[in-house]
Image 1 (cartoon, rainbow, N blue to C red):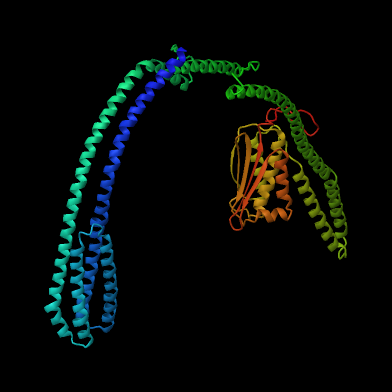
Image 2 (spheres, helix red, strand yellow):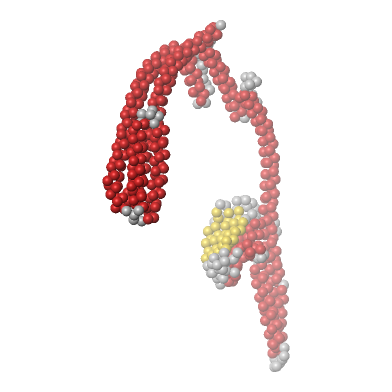
Length: 560
């Protein structure tokens, strides 16, 4: 019963204060409405009649001045076309003035300006009658001098009379406006005095009620505000000690339960954050949306963690399998490169030891036979011996060149810069073309990449000399981002790379294959008339630490 009685007491005090304030406010509002109606009527008259009528009069005066100026211009003009235009202008202005006069009459809501407005309209009518009867017919008859004399004698007088009528109209407007202003000022002063008195009384009553109620609820509100401020900062260690049997006490008790529930959820969240997914938060009721959602989140986290652990296990197994497969592919590529070079070296040796020796022996035998036949003067076979000997010599030179090109020098003990330098020097020796080079490499590389670098340099420099004319040939070898990079450029004729690759140029295809076989890339930049630049790169990060194999599959020590 204490809770109910105290609750009613608080509500009664608040209701009584609100009723009293409502009475004061209602009385003030009623008086304000009555006063505002009077002010509104005055304002409507002031704005509609005084301001609106004055604005219309200003437009009327402007139009009349324009009409009078047009009449004077008509009198002074000697151009028939200009006169015709001015006649039309005067007719239009007459229509505008008639319409403005009607609007001013409608705007005169208090009907205080009927006489003065009628005087203005009458003065203008007198002016237009004189114009239409004395000026226009006379000008139509071609008597300009008579028309000007009439203007000086009557027109000026009628215009002055019109101006006097306008001044009288304005003076009347000013007088009416002063009366309305005085009435509005009086209404405003009385309304302000009453409003100030009622407002002060209402403020005093509100202050009294506030003092009475604040002594009861200030302590509770202060504690709950402090707790709410702490909660907004994330500080859940809040304590509300206020207790009462009224509504404020019930609110404080609910606040304590909310803080306790938040603290429990924070405890469970901390446990989950450190990996303990066994904690749960029991919802306060079936409508505890936050507690129910927290419980679902915990269960979903358990399921997701289990699924994630399974997925991570599968991914790790797949990554390990891919890594082993990748290593085998890389080793196979390096072995393929080494075996390919070993096969080329063997073919070169076979050409040197087989066909080269046979052709050399045949050449010696031909020389012996030629000497024998030379002893017989006039032998018909002498010319044939010369042709056969030249053909055998050319064939021997070609086979030796092929054999030398197939045999690769021993690259394993050489550094990367030395491999590139050797390829450049051999090209300069064979072609006689100077190559500008910049070989800045100190990082070791496996034998397979050295072989690819040597062969690619041979092919790229050969293309620059053969297709680029050997103009401005340059080579650069360096390391960047754990990659060995090669650039060969020339200032030759250039070409369209896409068309060249479509035509199946073996040199470009072999260079691209050597790059991609070891995980590298190749890029060609060229345009007709702008030279050519070939860029290649090979990765070093996944090959530097692996053992290097020679062509027979044996580990090569000291490949650097």
